[in-house]
Length: 492
Image (tube, rainbow, N blue to C red; front, side):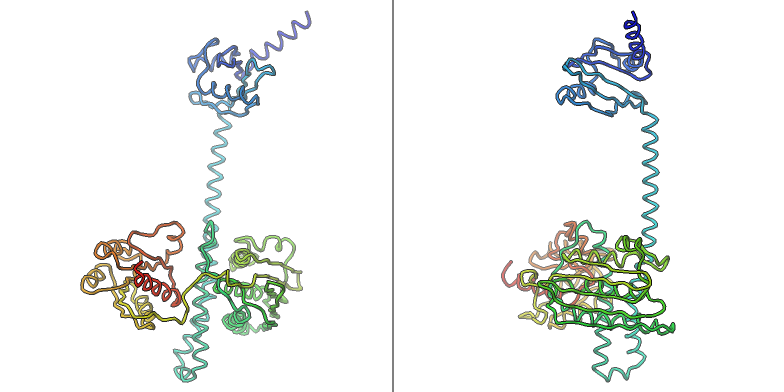
């Protein structure tokens, strides 16, 4: 009698449960439903003894086939959401199904997800703000030498009589501009899922360090001395083999490390840079006598946007250093102690011939000049490209718009067209397509600030033979024009 009462009590719990409970046969036939389950069945136009709806049948079949419990299977019923658990019996005669009304929970989860997305969005806005200030900070530092040395030459024409000094200033101005271009390039790589193809060339690391010391002199010497602070920079450069890298990336790496050291020495101090060889690697060390880093800062100093400098900090300098080292299969080690200074030790692989990508010889001129049309709405860019190409004795004509370019193209026999992408009224892509309709054998180079992005996304417009990223140095532009001339000669 007692067992019967206990059994009835347990059965009553199942029947009176506010949660739907079902039992289904292997064929999908509904064998049992408690009261909550029957209420749900009524909405599905289903009763005990009939086949269950398609969603249930699929889940039941999978539970039988896999002989595993299936948890949290959501099923929509009118405006409610039920989560069901499918439990096959030990002997495989049926599947018990236990349901929970998860409508409010799912609504809460969706609301939480919405809030989470809003938080992420706000964080991205914050990051963009930090990024913007960081870019301005870094570009100002990069352009400072260019402005300073160029203004010195402009205001002191007599300096031009000293060819060595003038050439030294021009090299520093050029280095400053390449550094600024490198910042933009690294910024694009920072957000790229995979880095753009990099041309590996032998880089004289010792010479590069000397160049960067001169390039950054206005920051670590002139600016600091104006504040009454003295910072000394020393080098101990041993004979090392060239490293395999892109020079602009290594230049930015050294600049970032020097500026990081300067920021750590507001009261002055000393920066020492050294190089040495070890097997097939070049080891570069830079140490300062600055404030050093506590343990917590050392853990996060390579994280993007992490900075201890407040509004003045970009949080990108060391992150870019770390990214560059890893991209070249190098290593970076940090040693730092509060009030005693910081030391970075970087190892980079030496350059071998197999690492390089074939590029045109910087000094090789084309076998014969060709007729080139340069199209850009910016007059300074037109002038720069024209001067680049006149070095190789090419015949150059320019146009400031697509319409003017088409007019000139119809009157002269050009061999190559170099065009900007973003121009008023007619884009470079539209111009290229129209030109190729008139002459299929013409070569078209698209010179654009979006070049790397377009190349990575395989977005080369119809009619364009090559895409070259701005700002393009004379070597890259010359190499590309020479390659097209060679193709024309070979009939390719």
